[in-house]
Length: 83
Image (tube, rainbow, N blue to C red; front, side, top):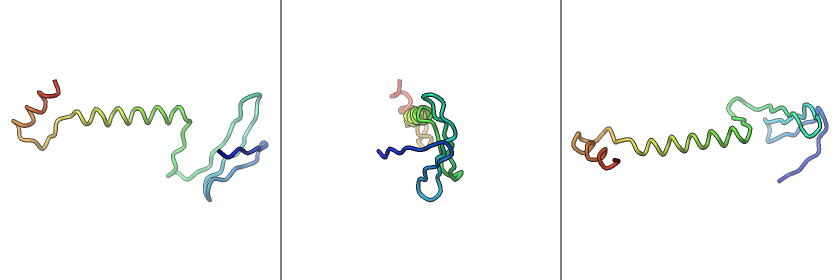
């Protein structure tokens, strides 16, 4: 982990196109600004973790759906095995 000290209005660059700015410091809170291309998704860690958990749950539930390309008999057998 790289640890840097910055003052208000100073920036940190990540690659060529992502800039992290220190906007404000109040007590133990630091407000930061992130400038990044629209193609780069930026989330707070707790939001990122929640999205990841939802995606994982959705992928697991999708695996439980019957295969729609099966014959009617095979689909029936597949759905009965889920019960």
